[in-house]
Length: 116
Image (cartoon, rainbow, N blue to C red; front, side):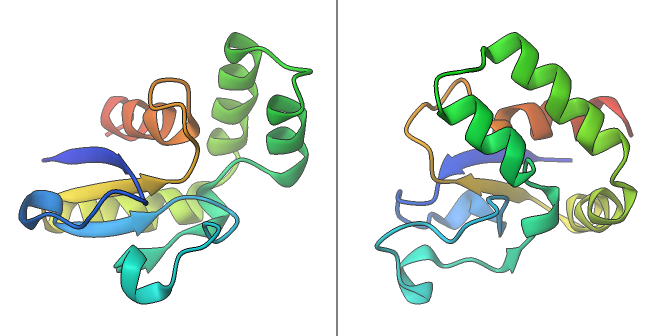
């Protein structure tokens, strides 16, 4: 089972496997061809309210993580779809934020691997 994360703005690579966009909003300035997204799972992304809270400099990473995990716990359908894709082969979770360490795709990766 292989799950990677990558900014959607990085070029597609042979080892990406299925490229799954896990953002609620389409990445700015990207065409569908440039993004090379195989599946867009909007509903697995943080809620609009949580995203605005965190990116509005009101929230901190620890609290964001706890809130996002609580949202994932209450959202089984997109998680089941993601798990099916992971079971089928390599997957790369795509996100658009600049921070490559503190982002929801990293949390999502850890979450799905721990909750197998």
